Amino acid sequence: MAAILTASRIRGRRTGRFWPLVAAVLTAGVALGEMAYAANNSVQGAKKEDGYEVDAPTAILIEAKSGSILFEKNADELRAPSSMMKLMTAEVVFSALKKGEIKPTDEFRISENTWRKGGAPSGGSTMFAAINSRVSVDDLLRGAVIQSGNDSCMALAEGLSNTEAAFAERMTKRARELGLTKSTFGNSSGLPDPGNKMTVRELAMLARHIVLTYPDQYKLFGEREFTWNKIRQQNRNPLLTMLEGADGMKTGHTKEGGYGMVGSAVQNGLRLIVVVNGLTDSDDRATEAKKLLEWGFRNFEARTLFSANQAVGFARVFGGENRSVKLASPEPIKVMVQRNGTDKLVARIVYTGPVRAPVAPGQRIGVLKVWRGSNIAMEAPLVAAEPVATGSTTRRAIDGASELVIGLFRAGAEKL
Image (cartoon, rainbow, N blue to C red; front, side, top):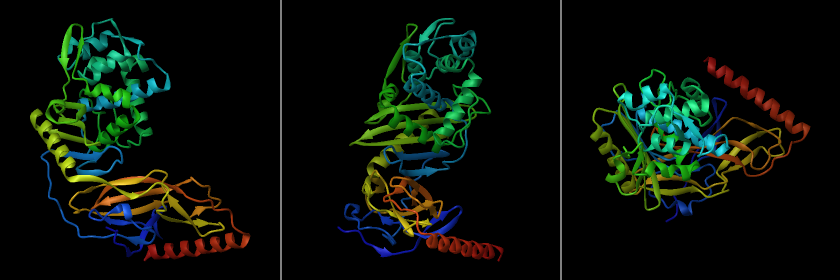
């Protein structure tokens, strides 16, 4: 079945203003494999609300590979992440291991501070590491991931940054590097602290990053039990025994944050990640997470919007031999759509422009953003698919005059 194409003017963003550009609007029911070149065209269909709802105050469901968002509810509301925040601690350690800053066999000391605040005397979740003992990074990670040990996280923090406070600053810096713009951290464990704030969206982004970047370390999240100090403890993630294909990731609970969970599962080669937070009961968080994952597996499938290097649209060029440059993605652009074809997705190219010549092939120009209703479904970076050399003096003069006129016109319009 061929895609349906209709003429349309979609707009691209230029430094906060809109420029005429190209994009695609697709209906989930069309066969995207035969989608024609989409410049200045759109594919449209009727929108139908599925009416799906969850009890969790905040929730999100994404597909791991593309980052497509299948469902969200108050996804940008900052809340205490509780022990789900240990994912950030684990990521910092994974990154340090990858860079060779530390080795899995390196041993960190269990300080008195760690033992009292996070160990056996604390009464919280712990791996029961003995005071003044030395524990390998590998075992501390297992304690943090499988047993949710607060002492494990504190020992890792002190081992890497000398103090937990310094490690918390490192966590925030690393979060910004990963594009987590709202998350803040006051400690390494998620124990109550005013500085511990995350959204379910950023927790999902972090979980996706861990899954894709550290596939070997990710296996820790699926281990069912861990024994330390002759004490065997089960993995605290109930999804591991509740849902087929579940293999991660982390639960959390504090009085301030309520009950939350980051969960991930694979079925038929499709990996979904769910995050819920703010529930009042531990059973409810597991039930809600399971229901969302099952709904996603049952109702969604991946479709290709554009194949690798297929022209997606154009960006305006300033001072070049050509007035525009063709945009594409080096990787296939895929999005999750509902199997019954009830989604209406709108795709729009966003870039800062006009792009100044010369333009090199592969140069990052902008991003293709796909909306499902009023929410972003996925984003994909776009690069120049062809070179554009610097134009003649006359061409640059004409483009400069054109930009001046357009700027004056917009300035006048904004005053009206």
